[in-house]
Structures are given as C-alpha cells and as structure tokens.
Length: 316
Image (cartoon, rainbow, N blue to C red; front, side, top):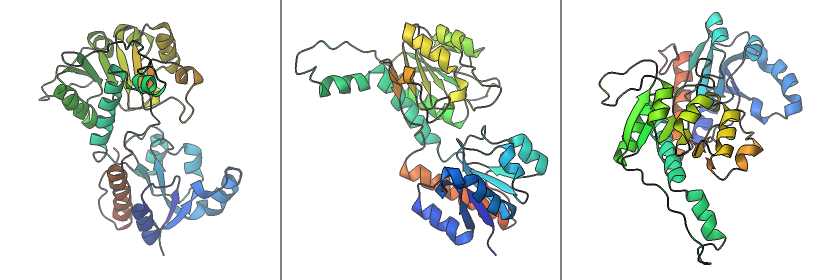
C-alpha cells in the first residue's frame, strides 16, 4: 500500500506531481474549499505518514498533533522558520528542505532588484508608458554601481552567490553574520549596524528565525541612510516593516527593493503607495528549472525515507 502524503500546496511542476501520484497516495489539502478543510483533515489525518509543505506555509504544532502517524515533513523550499521544529524533534519526525538548487536564481533576483532600484527601472518604465519621454520631460540621473559598497547580511550559499554577482558589477562587498567564514576573501563587519553604516546597498540573505526577527530595525535603516537601498530576498520577518515604511516615507532611507514581506501575500497599502520601493511577489526561486529541481528533491527525499535510505537534505 502506498504511503499517504498530505500535500499542503500545489506543485508548479506537472512532472513532480505525476511522480508524487505514482509513488504515494496524495491527500491534497489545497484542493479543498477553505470552509471544508477542518472536516476533511479530520477524515484523513489518522493515516497520513508524510507532509509536503512549502517554506511559506510550513506546519504548526496544532496540525502536527492531528497527525499521529506522520514520519516526515518535506519542505519544498529552503526556509524552515514556518515549521515547528521543536514539535517535530520532540516526536522524532524528520524534516527535509531543498537547499542548493535555488541558490543561483535567488541570487540573480537579488541583483535584479538591486539594479532595478539603483537605475529606477519601474519609474523609467512608467515614464515612457505615460508619455513623459515623448513630451520632453526631464529625466533625473541615477547612480552607478561601480565602486559602491554592497553589504550582505547572511553569508551562506545565497549570500556568497550574491557577493560574486555584486563583485562582477565592480562593487565592493562586505558581509555580516554572527559566525565568521574563513577563506571567502570578503571582509566581515563587526555587526549588522556597522555593515549598514558602511553600505550603499544592504542585501538581506539571512535565515528567518526568532533570533533574526526584526534584526533590520529602525537603527539599521537609519545607518543605511537617505542614499542607501535595502534589498530583501530572505524573509519578511527579518525587517521591521513599520520602521521600513516610516523610513521610506520620511526619505531617511533612499530606496527598498523587496521580494518578501511580513504577512504574505498581504502587502501593506502604505508600501504599495510609495514611489521609492520596488516590489515582487516572493518569486526568488520561481523559474521552471529551479522549481523542477526543488520538486524533484522533495520527491527523492520522500522516496529515500520510505525506502529506508539516508535522506538527501535533512534539516539539522
């Protein structure tokens, strides 16, 4: 009999979904009407042995408590901050994620956002579309990247990939994270505040956790300053969103470029109304190639678990 898997969200990859259906009995929560989900969950919970979720959705302690037979939670994403790891560890439930395969695409988006903010691409696009150029209106100059300082907060795989891309544009790179990394050839700032003070562009690439929540606060934003730009491709929880809105409104922070938000998919109207922010809907890994690779890693981890083999990407 095939193991039953509770699928929390649709996979964008048809090939991945086909493999899941081939090897497992899939119970698709996302297909159920919202008002019927609680009753439907109660009907399937007793036989579910695995959960497939996303980094944004995760799984909380209350849902885990409804699943007495669950053995593994497979996260289709790199972040596990939405997974109650204390609850999974207490029950010996395995957790996997999909690191590595999304590094390049997320780093690419970080530089895309940085460039969009630096060269004011959304505003220039609007300028052309609304006839400003044809009408001969003045175009304000933007700022070159060469020689500017790109500070990277969080220097794991993605942070280091961002650094390489920034260096290719002639930028100077510094980083901060609590643990220094040897042999990377990039100077480490003494603190996040010191990194912000030294940076023209501060790119947030640290993991989301209680320890990093609102670590980019009003003081960090003030240190980045009216000529500075904040780029966030990590987690919305790392940035104090109210402080960010205030800084952008007051122009005490020059620009922001954001792919992640505190309460996705709800983006505050105050952010959407500002003209000094670039917004994208959490699409760092949203390419065909990467989503296929992520989904395949999820499938391979589930097959390894139920085949009695070592997990490919266990979460410590």
